[in-house]
Image 1 (cartoon, rainbow, N blue to C red):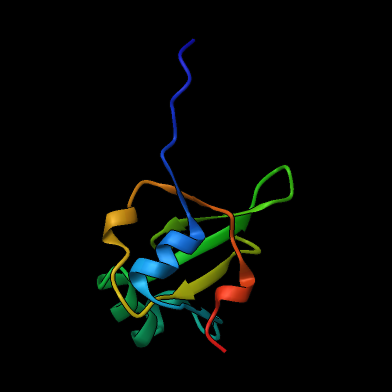
Image 2: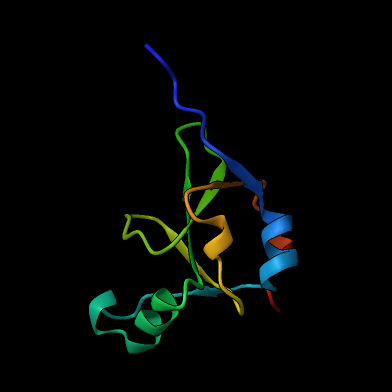
Length: 95
């Protein structure tokens, strides 16, 4: 059995290249949220969730998950597509 190597990127690197994100709260169904849909289309959404080990990790794009946190970035996250974002530092969020 061959294990797939998942490419990773540090959260601090994402913030450096794409700007300080803000936490986005879903108050309605994602499909009905026009602001969120526009951010998804422009590749500016990151989904953060807890791993089985309890640490947070992120992935570029919107993935509807129970207990997930969504971050909106000022610039596109396209260069981080298909990468697991590790080392989530909540202090790097926009005030």
